[in-house]
Amino acid sequence: MTQQDPRTTDLATSRPIRQRPEPKEIDRKARFKVPAQLPAKQAPAERIHNWDEVTFLFDPEIAKIEATRCIQCPAAPCQRACPVHNDIPGSFWLLEQGDFAAAADVFRETSALPEMCGRLCPQERLCEGHCVVGKNGPPVAIGKLETFVTEWQRKHASVDVTPVASASGFSVAVVGTGPAGIGCAERLARAGHRVVMYEAWPRPGGLLLYGIPNFKLNKPAVARKFDDLSHLGVEMVTGTRIGEALSLDELANEFDAVFLAFGAPESAHLGIPNEEAPGVHEATEFLVRANLPREALPEQMREPLPELRQVVVIGGGDTSMDCVRSAIRLGAETVTLIYRRTETEMQGRVEERKHAREEGVQFEFLTMPVAVLTDESGAVSGLRCRRMQLGEPDESGRARPEPIEGSDFDLPANAIVVAIGYNADPSWGDSAPEVRRDRWGRVVVDPESMRSSQRGVFAGGDNVNGADLVVTALADGQKAAAAIELYLADPERSW
Ligand SMILES: Cc1cc2nc3c(=O)[nH]c(=O)nc-3n(C[C@H](O)[C@H](O)[C@H](O)COP(=O)(O)OP(=O)(O)OC[C@H]3O[C@@H](n4cnc5c(N)ncnc54)[C@H](O)[C@@H]3O)c2cc1C
Image 1: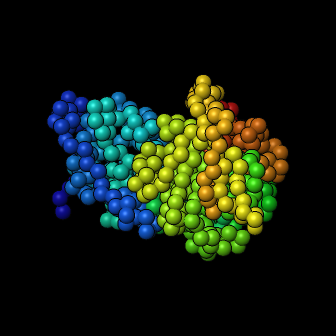
Image 2 (image 1 turned 90 degrees about the vertical axis):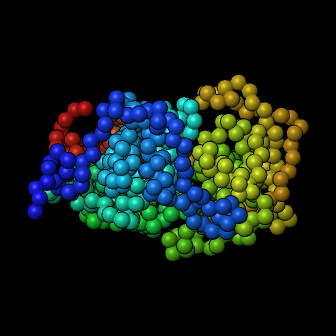
Image 3 (image 1 turned 180 degrees about the horizontal axis):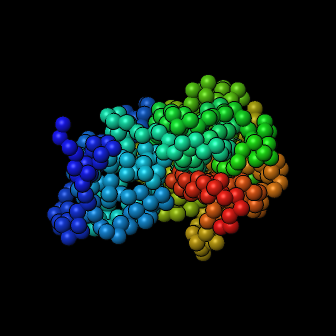
């Protein structure tokens, strides 16, 4: 047997170690000339009849070409702009040489959810928005390459799910099984701690399962993540709401530390007449009834959605886009999105708006809901709207929408979906008086250590930041895991 050279071969995995080139060895001019590549998509006429993901995975050879568009900048602004700081150039160097599994492992070093982030991150604001190649043309397709390598690894190789340390004897409870909870649980389990995750819904996954529709993220990808966690020894307790079934104090007594990752599940309300009429839906309720099998839903949500004819969705973020596109797939005759500002101020991903337009969604910008209209039975028959114009910037820095008097008009609708944002669960604080919350009900933490005001209780994700992103919640969870490790080693330490 030939002896392996540790300078060129990883002795643990027998995989070649491919040294990154020196910056001067990279022919940037040649790389700038490589035409941008993208994976194929389902045609709109086809995809509106199914719930499968819109974008296919990259072909391996095309992915390698796209990876060579990365100019390997030493400053890596893409990496700095990524909330979990993935080593994107490092991964793409391995990818372009065809070592897909090693390229995937580079993402896994810094991210517990690379398959999800590749599909769901608003890359145009994060990594791709800072890509130097993108200054003079399309940026490197970072998200789609991330999804490709990590899915390739799942199918053709394996993901390492062994703890790196022996059992520590410490135990941690994680409340909530969304991205923040997953990021924290995985890190702690790898480090040898006993982790028990608690989840109010019947199945784990948070908004990855109970919110984000299949055409953006297929559900087997979520299930595989929980298989990983199970292999790492993470215990899962579903259908259990902390604060009702068990109190935070009970958890704090039983475990050495607690991580709160219960998200921001409370739908914001419009505050307009007839908002409670039958036919008006909250976004999450609409999406989960549209997307998930009955057995994954609690009893009270198992009834199928009524027939949709004219649907109006209110809102301007990712959630509203998921609702309009779900309504199209449910066979609605017309689907209209109303938003009170212009498209420029919309928060959600540009690509999702493009998909929605291709699928036949109508957009009414500078439009505000005024009242839900009902028929003689009390059911929804339309939405009265008012035109708006943009004024001076408000406290968010975005132009303030102002109503135009006398501009009211009616849109016919037999279903209205409200997707105007989410807030923290207001009931939570009652059962956890020692955990300080701000006036919006969000848990207040020290941003360095993610510690709450209750000793041994940490928090992160949407329950701290308000409704945000998968990757920011994940980053919080991973950061909190590191802080919890320090706390377990020295509960008296000061940060
Ligand atoms: C429809 C929709 C589409 C979105 N699309 C995108 C997107 O494309 N890209 C993107 O980056 N972000 C998107 N987001 C935002 C993203 O999903 C969230 O920011 C992210 O999931 C927050 O993670 P989290 O772990 O903090 O909370 P969550 O994912 O909300 O998970 C919290 C979990 O805690 C559970 N829980 C709550 N209270 C309790 C309790 N008392 N006891 C036990 N369990 C409890 C909840 O049931 C839930 O499962 C979307 C959000 C929505 C609603």
